Each structure stands twice: as C-alpha cells, then as structure tokens.
Image (cartoon, rainbow, N blue to C red; front, side, top):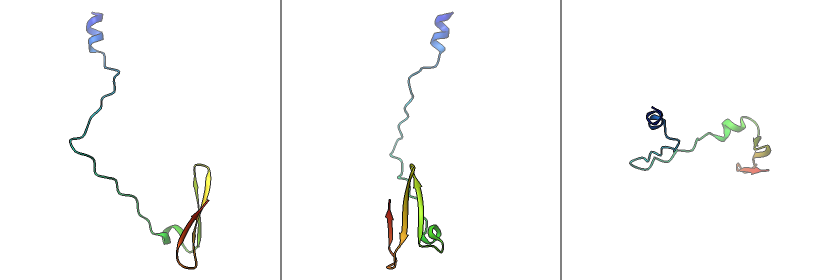
Length: 66
C-alpha cells in the first residue's frame, strides 16, 4: 500500500514548459514628460532608497541626476 501512495505522490522536480516559439518582446510603458512634470520643471524619483532628479532645462531637454 505504501508503494502505491509513493507512486502517486507529486514530483518535487520543477516542471519546465517551453513555448513553441519565442514570446513577443514586451513593449515599454510610455508616458509624456508633461504628465510626469505637470507645470513644474523638476521631479524627484525614488528608487531603491535613492533619490533621482528629473529636470527640464531651458533648452527643453531632460536631465536625470542622482
């Protein structure tokens, strides 16, 4: 009886399913800088405990600094 229970026990080996064809690459999210900055010229982004500043310059360029 124990042999039949052991034979029915699920395998602890991971199941790997390979697709028939490669997955399509994911498209990056896109957002307008005017939505991010609003009426301001600077935005602070927090990432992994660090602050990054995204600034809009007088020449209408974006600069990201730590």
